Length: 131
Image (cartoon, rainbow, N blue to C red; front, side):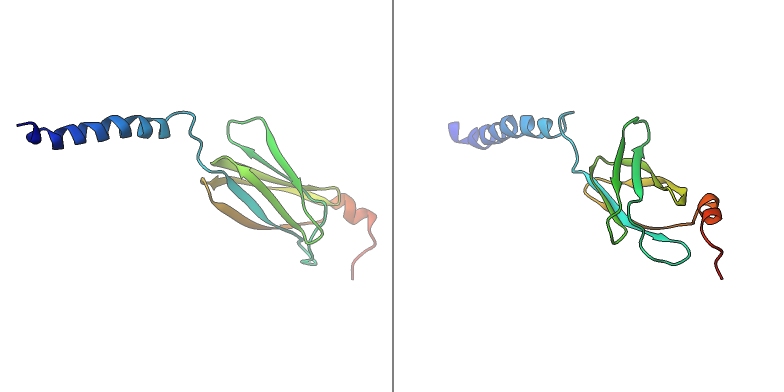
């Protein structure tokens, strides 16, 4: 008679062990893997990479912005960002600022973008006329 209860007891044992493990995986302590925003910034006229462009990413509902600078090849990388909707802002003293809004970054994903900045009117006034 006891042999009829063995499958039932095994099933109950499995539930007793797995339910707490699954509940912990869905708890508030669980954070999805971070995402990455990366890309390149170029001069809108010459198409050359721009160095030392300040790139900042701010998420909707957060006051803290993530900031980096472009390297000599014009590349930027903002790693370890939580999933969310971001606005990217690009700033350089000799160029008009630019921004891209509503960038949806999903967990464990990378979003790439190529941005062309235009010289600002104040920097054009300081530089010699182009032919």
